[in-house]
Length: 282
Image (tube, rainbow, N blue to C red):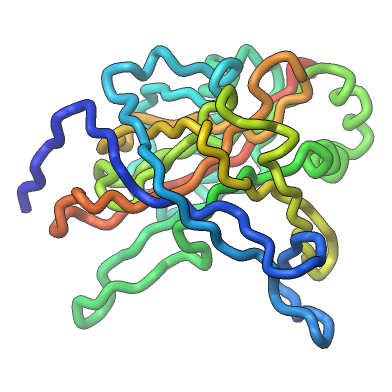
């Protein structure tokens, strides 16, 4: 199969799903648990809005975590298939740890989970999903500010208070697997175009044994969106979800999006996203 290479820049006119309220309750979602009687699984509506996602190809070095909330980096991994969980947690986690130290100047990195999204050819040549998580087509940030600090305390225990006295960041490292991304690429929002106080909507995530919170995002016509056209497995996107410093970009909204110009015979998107806490202290 031959897939044509797009000429850059390849800005995409598309639709992104923003937050909409469907009742008077504070936003919530039940995860891996049955809601109480009379409660829905969640009360999050969709507010689809037309936007242009701009192509950063050829301009990758212009974007930084502290100014825009995201950053592109070239990084060749020894891992190619991402099918062996043990190898991911040993070989790949170590690679990501070193990458984050190099790109951020952080002194300690704690990777606490990862998500893989991909499809493989199963029996009878049908396609099946091989992960419980689907590509998320809703503008969001993975943690609220308070939930990020809570995550540090959950994971670091007795070391948490000491580490929280220095700078703390929560950064996701997103990488395509096996081939460039043609379908449902990743869009990241410029922090400077975000109204932090008006646009961010905390959403309670209620688990069987704990509670967390993410940000959904209200539509704002000032938002400016970017992606890396046909991003390859040798290119990663660093996505800031939290920064304890308040005089710079603290996070970036992100979402998958539909590009109707993608070749119909192009392979399906495969990706891995690693989530890490980055500490300036040790």
